[in-house]
Structure formats: structure tokens, C-alpha cells
Length: 273
Image 1 (cartoon, rainbow, N blue to C red):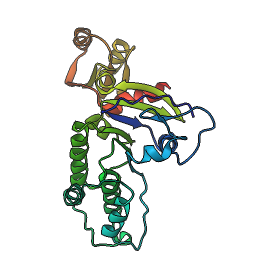
Image 2: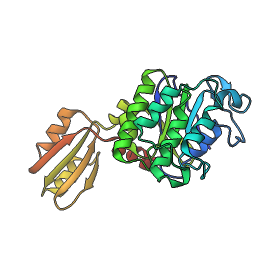
Image 3: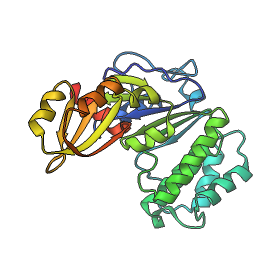
């Protein structure tokens, strides 16, 4: 792997890439679950290999796949988890369970995938960690619970919590994160703040025209994609006035101009790499 990143304290840092890109491996290195063959990682100035025990006291972690004790009741499991920390606010713990609609009287094996993920979220947050490491935290959650989780995370950010948010769902990263790192094949290909990333291409143009050859000639320096009969999408990275001048040279049936989504920008970087 070739990963070199620095996360600022108090920010939500997005870590994006497709499955198999190296996201989970990087997180396991940070947690001291696997060991690097070269290089080092530090959290709050502490080496993860040397001071792992101290670091884990101030970290909350939500794994991508949640597997706890199948026959344990959730309430017992959370109490057991709380015993590992010096001070757990029981009122806060109860509020997390209430906000996430978690039934603590059930056994873990009785839970759906989404409810298992809720247990992991509560466990990660119960001791009010300085750093949250989240590996695909929304997988299995319904849209309502995803919204609740985002509200919790933004509230944690206001309190000064640093959040490392790994995901392949780019809309989540766009909504939550201040900065994002793109990883491909174990290598960081780009680190940008969200606004810079979104503005990497100034505009997305969707239009309908019969003048395909003319369109391709005028926008030969831009990315042009066909989206059906007479319909095209253009990623344009120039001056807006220049864009309007180019469009005026084409007989257009319909046109729509918008800012690019994070997914469109990310895929462009990914294809270039």
C-alpha cells in the first residue's frame, strides 16, 4: 500500500474508493489489528504500534461487518463494553439507543443487519471518543436511520470529535465530509476538500440536439457522453461565458446546466488514474 494522509483534528474526513481499494486495510492498520511492513501511523501523536492501548481508549470504531456474541442480550453486551472505559455517561448511552430505536432486550442473533449496525454505532459512541473511525457505517441502515446517524455525527463534530468516514457511497461523503481522500489499488490518488472536489469541473451540461457532429467538434476538449437519442451530457471545465458562447453555436432543443455531483468528479479522477 502507498497511503500518506493527514487528518485535521475536529474534521470529518472522507475516505472513498470501490470495494477492494484498501479502505478497510488502512483502518485495520490504524487500529493495530494488522501490522505494516513499512512506514508508520500515528493518532494524536501516538504511534499505533507502540501506544495502541492508550489510543484505543479514545477511539470509537464501527466495522463494516458487525459480529458480536450471538447469544448475548444487547443490554448486557453494552454494559460489558462500557466496563472497558473509565467513565461512560449512562444517560447518553440510553439516549443513543433511543435515537437509533434499538431494542436492548433482544439477543444479538435475533437482530437484522441494520440493527446489528446500530449496536456497533452505540458501542463506538458510548464513551464519547475523541476519534470515530467508521467503515461503511450506513450499510444495512434504512434511510430514516441513516438520517439519524448523520445528525449524530454532525453533532459529534460540533463537540470537537474527529471523524474518519470510510465509504463507497459518494453522496454520503458529499453531505458530511470536509475533506476527502480517494484510494485506488492501495494508493492515494487525490486528497481534496469537498468544495474543491466539486468544482474540479465547473459545470455539468445536459442537452438535447440533433447536431451531434457539431456538438462533438465544438466540445472536443471536454468530456461528452451520450445519454440516449439526441441527449448528451458534457463535463465542462472552462469559463461560464465560454460555455454559453459554445452552446449558442448549436441548435438546442433543451438544455440544463448544473454543478457536478461528487460521483461525477470522483469517477473522472478515477478514470484518469
